Amino acid sequence: MENHKNFSEVHYKEPKKTDKKRPVRKTAYEKEIDKHMKTLFPDREERVFYEQNSDFLQIDIHLLEAPTKKDFHVLYTVGMSALPMTLPEDLLPKFKDLERGELMLLLPAEWSLPIPEDGKVDNRLWWPVNLMKYLAYFPHEYHTWIAFGHTVSNSDDYVPYDESTKLCGVMLGSLQEEISILRGKDGTQINFYTLIPLYKEEIEGKQEKGTEALITKLSDVNGFGMIVFPDRPNVWEK
Image (tube, rainbow, N blue to C red; front, top):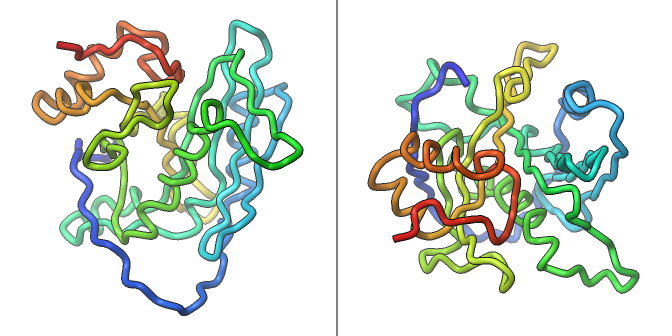
């Protein structure tokens, strides 16, 4: 991606408690986002997991199914771009184009996301979707921002996302620019960040050696770690 610095630390404060009901916001770029993604990944069956319980933002998860068993599912959020993120004042106005974003995540073709009749989903399969929703809310709820190279651990204790994996944090990556950047009709830039789940050692290694060092190590695994495999090799294992 162009026009960004390699920021890696996310700073935020706990939101103030309030009983005031907030209006639910939908992104004005919904149709443009859908067109953008379906043009890039054509001829795929689509499923949409609609927001059910938000009192703040409507974050829907769209899934474009893998066309073959050798391909991958493409998941993306629609809703995070409803509001601008809160960038540090010293980045404005130069980096104003980083204010709005959406998230992407890639799953292998064999990954199934069934919705049971009782509504109780299997976290072993659904944790990547839950991660997408959490991160889509995160910058707006905590009045901060996330961008390429940022890492967010699953608590200070690096708790795995599920018992079936030791992945316990995530880094925001990006695909080629024609996928990762959408310029809306009104001139607003929307940045698509691809989520790369990480192990504790990889997060710590990146914090010590930097983003490029981690990306170089991830280049040895399937899809630079962008295709989510819960048991993929740990590239920074000691």
